[in-house]
Image (cartoon, rainbow, N blue to C red):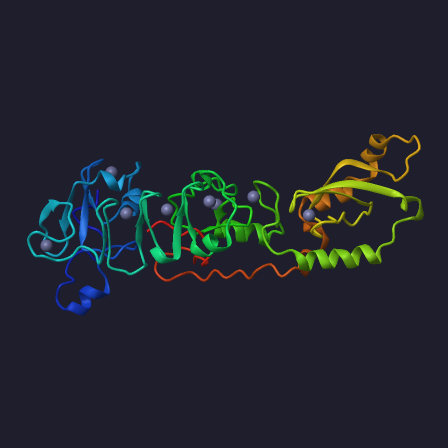
Length: 327
Ligand SMILES: [Zn+2]
Ligand SMILES: [Zn+2]
Ligand SMILES: [Zn+2]
Ligand SMILES: [Zn+2]
Ligand SMILES: [Zn+2]
Ligand SMILES: [Zn+2]
Ligand SMILES: [Zn+2]
Ligand SMILES: [Zn+2]
């Protein structure tokens, strides 16, 4: 529609070097070319500008022609203008048809098939996870989850692999967008939505629950009751004294546990185990199942919110341990 007007700031930026330096391109990229979009035969600075204005999606790998914004010459996709010689972007990837003057430490990953931001030296491509991971994880090792970044975010159900939003990688390896992760923490959910493993260091909350357990004696008639629990953090079974506040894993100390077969008297002569379990365990079950969310959410040091809007595009900041976003 508005392609005659062309995208903001496309024109009249040639008076001084400085002015041209200041703003070329669009809200998403600093570049000196407009794409001829084959899907609708229009001109757009980038695929995001296209997708915001059209009812269909633009595949940037389908582009064959562009127009130099310095001299208006239409030409095939290439790194430099064949007429005026300007470089369309300091960073150029002719596989992705990506041009960007802004240094975001872009690199093209063959395994991912896209350009990412953050520096090739800081990430490696894990063939099994089929994603780029921080090099720190190459040193200390990580839990491979086959093709993990090809599934959608379990919180917002949107794409992860080609997202421009950074993705948090919890220890269990199940990715979720960083803002979605922070939103979960904010609402008191500390367990991975996919596998229920704690996503952050929970030791403060576990210590708090230890003191709650110590301060809350169980009625004497429960003294002999035991529960068999499965830990969702270390995946081990243990048998512990039953307590309404929570059931603590004997291996790793987590309260992120669930009962496997209800609670029962230690030397149960003939009393049925299953029968006992149904009534009074529910409160502790739901409490521990939610990763201790009810217990003392306020007591935990859930990592700070740390989302300052980053300059021009409101993309959340990536943590060094995130999967690098798409460039
Ligand atoms: Zn189109
Ligand atoms: Zn040109
Ligand atoms: Zn690329
Ligand atoms: Zn990769
Ligand atoms: Zn892996
Ligand atoms: Zn999400
Ligand atoms: Zn998980
Ligand atoms: Zn455990």
